[in-house]
Length: 307
Image 1 (cartoon, helix red, strand yellow):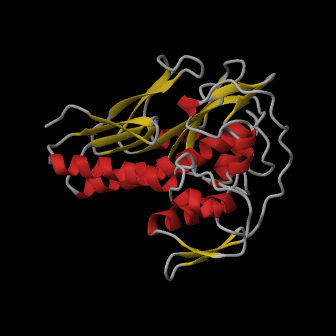
Image 2 (tube, rainbow, N blue to C red):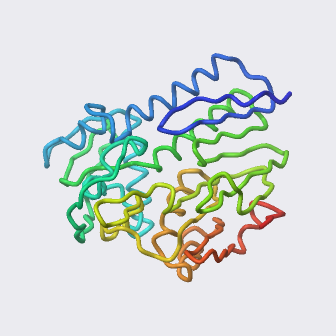
């Protein structure tokens, strides 16, 4: 039996849960607590939370962290390695320099800030010791887990829902979406400049989707227009001709990462890079002139894409 969507706010977004079979209210509350716990642990906007304390730890110290933060940091650094640093969780200081030092809905126009400078990517910022969840901190850079932690939270939340018997479901946290089951579900891909309008729709029954966009999270810092997507190899703001990338992949965290990289690379470079590194991913990208391109691998996720 299909239930009405279960909605709640967490991680600065609306979380929407749809299950095709009844599941108990205590499971819904547990899912809500899960997202709140990830936010409390991994957000860089909460003073004195675990990530804030880790970022303030002295260079060269061994820091014992929770299993959650240990896992998210370890996976984030894994993806930093396999993307050659295009995705890089060590951009917290650069984000602060461009004015993104608080939750996005609290931001306002700011005075001219310092220019970003090229940051040398550090090969070994941490040493991970699985025994006891300890990290040797070898960097003075700040960690920004951003959308990666949200995507990871969706993956774990969807896994929990399947374990408690939700055979057909959707879990959507602000566009970070996991879908599973035998029935096809209709999903929309938002227009890059008009969030309430779909630029494309498709049917899918299994997989994960995430979108990165340079328009919606943008602001002015003096005379400079800023956005939240930084090139992890340099620490500089991504300036490619891609304004939006929607990615289909096996996990939501992976979709998040690939979508960010596709907004860093140019319209012509992106698919070649994606298929070299993530051959089973698919994407729809849009350039600054409104041109749309879809990878041939979209067939792995949907039989029908409507533009």
